[in-house]
Image 1 (cartoon, rainbow, N blue to C red):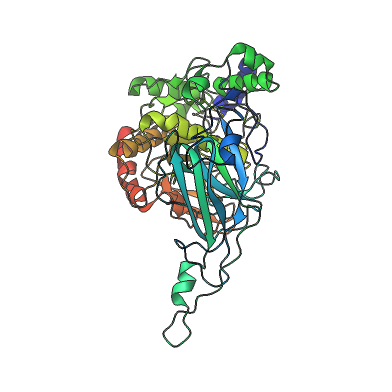
Image 2 (cartoon, rainbow, N blue to C red):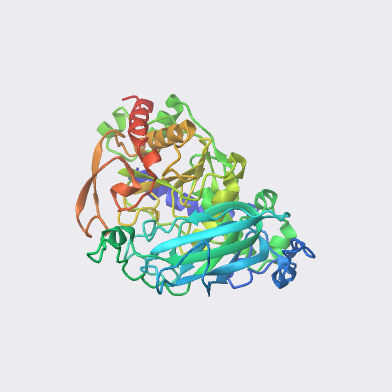
Length: 490
């Protein structure tokens, strides 16, 4: 693989300069502001003249940009009958209001090391209706998906603390409440000796709390961009160059500008494997590769990534020794046809709201079993991700779209995890049933520098104390390992 990587980096740079690609949707890339990012396309205000209409509705008639983020600072809330608060428990949020269209929500705050202990709930209004959803919980995971500490991505000064994102579908109204609560384990064990519970004081909420409302942009706009508009955009040339760069990183697997990397059968995959590993010693090159057939993979261009959002260039680790499986904790209320929009939303949330250089995962899988390229840099290469704090080096991160704490993942999604890991780990001669050692970069389970023995296919919780990838998905990893080994011909 080393020879392949070294030679291909040159190919990537040269091809990126010559690649005549039309860039994805030309969304504005300025840092989120309290109203919205700049745009050029007007959209009617929701429900003007209805009982729900407010001044915010009139503001919603301002120019709208498909592919944008509204960032709204939270406000102190008065006592709320639906959420009784303990003595002195801080509570912030936003009262019911109309906003510009969005499909995904999340909460961010200033200090990425600060933790939000409490409950975040949101309710939204379906676009073009007066129908409000019930209250939905937003998962308040803290710092478990992130770049390793001390890396340039982690120390850029742009990184923020954040909740998991939640997909709510096309919406134009929102209400939010964030209530600080003591950690449940502490609360349950605290008593005053009389049998009454003596709840510890609720910790303060992190500073700088903001609600992020992400609009993924329309699929049509993501597929094709008006050449004149792209040329007039200040960031157009840069976006076009980054689109070429991302596509060229897969030039050994698909034609430039491809929306999908096609599947290969076993014979074709083995032939590709030997081509990619031509620089290996002869005895290793002649050994049976045990690599699973390459599955079809939707490229970043295929799901409509706005390459102008991410940082230029790629970051690689030495090899891939393990795969960490995640869930996105973004809810299961999406159709498979909406998966590209959901991925674009998570990508924008990771980069614009959380301050990462790109989407954190190396691959994404939807509940219908379709596989998507995540972080740019080439699907066959050891791209350094930001998926498992402490263990991003020499690993790859695979996220299944949805929440799988209580809901069982589809058989198609679990099968896709097996097929993807059989191929990806096989490229680096890794047995999916085997164990490996990774050096910890520091997590809440392992100190920095400790060599940790892990399954070649592990769950996020194996490297970091977290609920991810949800118990129902985690319990399927044994099946994924067995099937991946079978796909490798073991």
